[in-house]
Image 1: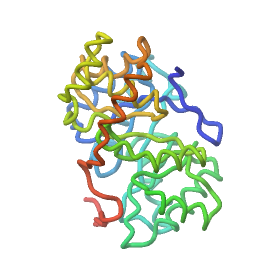
Image 2 (image 1 turned 90 degrees about the horizontal axis):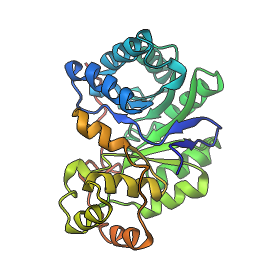
Image 3 (image 1 turned 90 degrees about the vertical axis):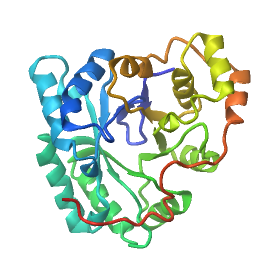
Length: 282
């Protein structure tokens, strides 16, 4: 299994990225260094996380120390919900670059569709323009349903490279994943461990014991084997290392069948059809 996914525009993206949600400024520097030392080459942040600047400083420090080059890092950030206007989206991207201290990001995503606002198509046109102008390597979306994706494609003719969504063993989203596969969209799972909620499931425990791995490693390996990429979030060095140590074992057909049975359609985060928070940040 490859440690990288090929986006439909030809860009290569690591299958495992370090999640930045709720990582504090104080934690970001050591967490990023630990992750890079462990082999991570992708990081995920966003303006509402409040740590774009801290991630930028951490990236700069690792580059300055010769630990990694900018070309070897895949940086993901997102367009906030209050900026779903063509011109404002362009300005928001510029602001993220300034905050990160970077010349470009590798993947820029619309964070949420915010259906009540009904401006995500305008926002998408701005992201497409950024890509056309070679200011970002790839553009995509986050928390989009099949209906949202269909509308983007129908109205612009441009297919997102990535859809970053809540996806866990308890929320496997087979219909959405099938749509992604049909259209060449990479599925990127945030909260891939369900915020730890499913790790005590006895089925997961039995499969973990069978392979001599942790339940978290089995859950993450399941994601990779069904075709998802993942963004596990941790600030603990042992967890960071374990979350990328997924290529030395393989789940068999029986394991995958049992794990498929854990799908309960249970969300821990908001429903994208109902989430409409779009207040300005700061």
